[in-house]
Length: 210
Image (cartoon, rainbow, N blue to C red; front, side, top):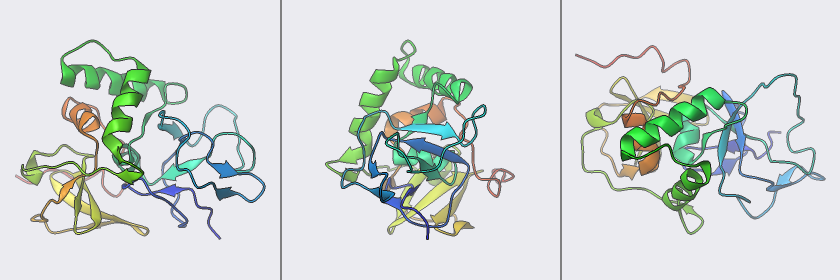
């Protein structure tokens, strides 16, 4: 039986077999004795995206009173949920994200705590995931952006939408109506400013239609 440590684009932590390309955490939110989640879904504003392999470290998920290992299908899902790259195990990606954030805002490179505070305000309404209004066309969204339509999350790659589910991604019609953006505005700004999210391999070959 799968542990309840897989994250959806809406930020929910669910028990599905899907593991994905990245791990990450929101602090300690589990009971190691039972390997089950506590009622809370975060213990810190620093929601990070980590590499599944780092040096010679090996972890048994949810086995100790340490950070709770969460898993994401790809970086687009993790970013949509409100996480950002880790400055320890993914330093190059974290610096690229920080630089893209600065290009988008037109200011200096932001401190990590500042980014975490801004993202925390953008990702939640109370305990629920915040959807952000969007009146533009899907063609204007950068690769890696995630929007919601009729309760489903869609990742944009090459100008095309792909529906996320527990089984992975599936192509969708290009005229999907957008109910709101799942990706936080600051993260969307970083994507627009050149940050390249790591997408699941089935999406990477896609190119924007001409």
